Image (cartoon, rainbow, N blue to C red; front, side, top):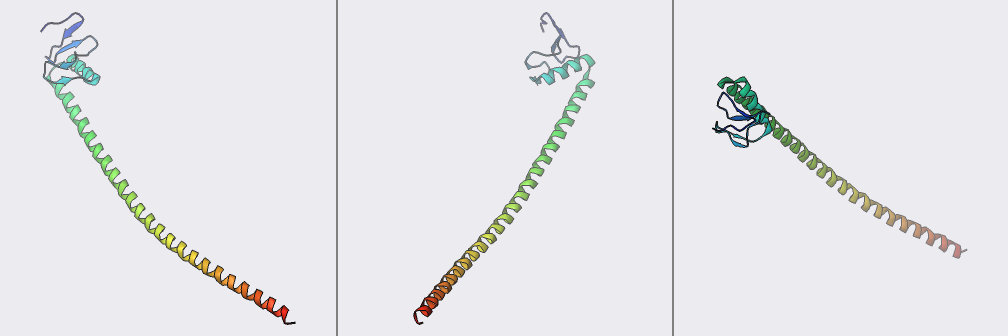
Length: 137
């Protein structure tokens, strides 16, 4: 492997690491695809610590982080599902209440219409009796 100026080869066989602790883009000599800056930093630290133990520690920490993330994502999905179920229950309750209120409105409108009709007939009957009473005197 040829090492360019300003680069050094790590002693644990991880790959070429620049002075800034970053590897060139693309697959490393270990066969891993290294593309994010975080991975560059981790590999730089591994190269400094040296040995397979450091790689195992990094893999173990990564696996723990991935597992925590997976659990957290599952909990978020469950919270979302619960929230959506609550919203569906609220929608059903509000639709039922809305139907009840629409029925009550219709009943009250019919009652109002009927009372206006009665009032109109009652006042018309009084007018007739008042006007009829004046004419007979």
